[in-house]
Length: 301
Image (cartoon, rainbow, N blue to C red; front, top):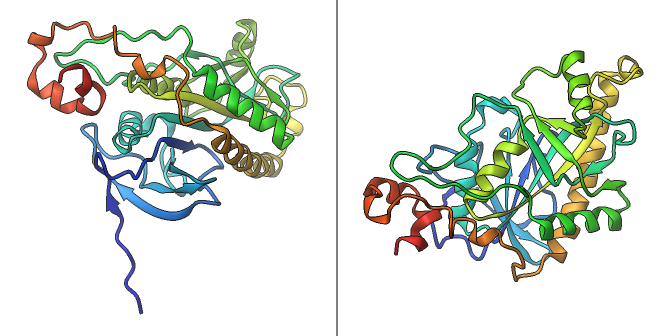
């Protein structure tokens, strides 16, 4: 009997041209269709990612997949090591990051089974570290447009090609969780004009920008949060069915988006730190340079 292969360890230069990363949220714990699969585990300067990264080939391109909550959904939103997840992708050479998540709708016209590609986030979390910087190195990245327009457009096009009803713009409000909203909170979010609510993407988007990654989110609508008059008539079984169907649609959307992504980056995401590093280079501690080598190495060489 052949011996099972042990997961490899990720390190710079060991990625075989992996340039596209996929983070799967609730309902999306694997990426069918990957060939030449290999599991990579790595301890980053910020600890371990949520799970092993699954590296493989999809539509002729090398991609890395990571289950945000771990396989089997073991991690609460507040327990996710977001910094390790993003840094591990950076170590592999990822330049574009597609993030998939389940969300609740705050508007009647955003229906369960619809997809939203948000172009804005409103962060209401308070207990998370959402920056790589500090401890001697200060950076302030521009974040007025928190998603990559080119990658977001590719996701929107892929949704339309797949036949999924898609909304190409909208604001995702990120709550701490793990509890869902109270009715008062849901109504407050509606009054502010937010479109969907989730518990993860704003944190990821901030870190992806600091890592100079193109970031786009695919928000899969599963329910109407708790504000809708018909909410109580929706069963748990129905929500699970929506999760399953959304995940199947997302897999096809991602496949088509990966197929369409151009090798050339036509955006500013790859130079987000160019004018963001504030600390005098002569004053930056060597430990900070080592810790953030994958992010800032090119600026201190």
